[in-house]
Image 1 (tube, rainbow, N blue to C red):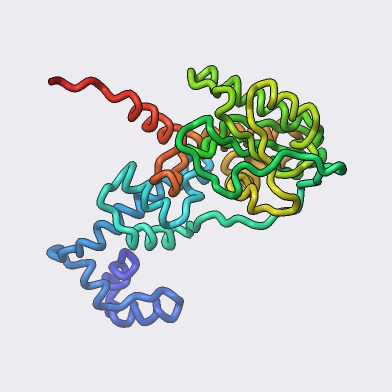
Image 2 (image 1 turned 60 degrees about the horizontal axis):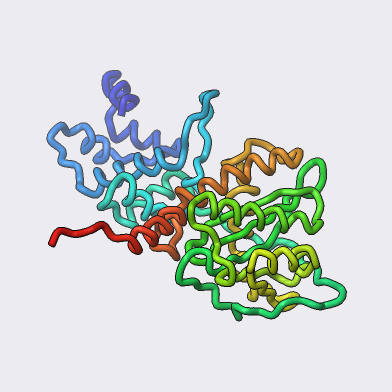
Length: 322
């Protein structure tokens, strides 16, 4: 508009200026210019709401770091549905899904996508293992009833780093994780001890005989050390069949989210992964976001920590006046 105003002051017609602009790739009509110059023009309600949604999505998806660089936030990884929920939850309760979709297209945002990984499960040679107590039923009525566990890998300049997770099926909360440079039994033993300690620290210890520990048929999970430790803690072991990802599908999903949201983006770590320290730094940030702020559609679009808090709050209702 400023350019057209300048050309008009020099005696050029609006139509002529707009025609030259269109020839140079700037698509603008003379009536559009005149409409925007009209001081009594009434903006459409959709134009105003779309501008508000674009502003909200921009603030959610990006932040400025201490060096003045614009960086993508974890919420910038959301797709249309989760972004719509987050905008309604935090900024604009009445934002429509269409407005959020248009805002994401305007800002060049799209949900992060998960890719297939390589096979990491190596069955034990003797084939001796516990039975499958879940039978692909990944549900629980309360925390500390079913834990699923698995590990994945991250490429670094110093070699492979393996990261093991333990997930509570009820709230889908990551109760423990551990990174190591080898696939020894300690890779899965350490997070189990951490998970038991963490639940006890929260004042919600696992009760002996009530907890199921489910994994795939990897040699680490069928090892004698892990089996004895589970028996010592009163935890029932459960192991899926060999070479069947569906028997541990929930944990495979979490591994896919970890790869897509943490490893393959620069949100939680800026630059390539050089050593195990880089992997631990990024994983710690991702787990904190995943547990406390990430929206989960299967939980009613609330974070796992909030879902657990609501569960315990429902068990202990406040006294009501008679």
